[in-house]
Length: 235
Image 1 (cartoon, helix red, strand yellow):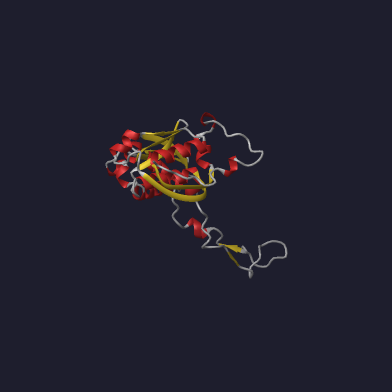
Image 2 (spheres, helix red, strand yellow; image 1 turned 120 degrees about the horizontal axis):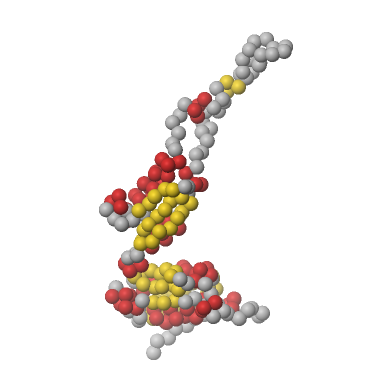
């Protein structure tokens, strides 16, 4: 008979005067993922039991594609050993799925219309979708302060009481004007090249894949699999 022990789980829900826990339909997936679990202990419990517990304590709608998981060699009875305190549900889910997949990145989860869908990474990445990422703050031009203006106190401006002509501010801004400045589009292209080089290079159309990035009006428009968007959002 399978046994599992949960020590002091969801203490915040048991404090005096706390509001009653909302039903699963009342808790958004985003709010559930950010919820901190005070303490939990999984001692050789099945993946199925672990998911049931997390579903109950978080109030989230969690659906598992068991057929997909079994196709990847992960069954409902995969054993989970996990102990932690004061950790958000999203971190717990990642660790549980990593434990079930024996440390391999086989499994993942994502928010789909307020349902946390647990499935394989392959299935999650089978769908391409588009997101817009504002990048104005990343491609803004930084002023060049390596050539500050020079001041000549030996000369004074010409005029009443003045002897020699001249300007006390010599060459102000001349250093920056003599240097080649990159356009916003060029800086954006550098950012795009960097992303395509370090985040799943095989995905992008420049390397024969289906993914694409385009710069428009201060933002990157990215069409890519889910794992790419997860990596971009984490930056």
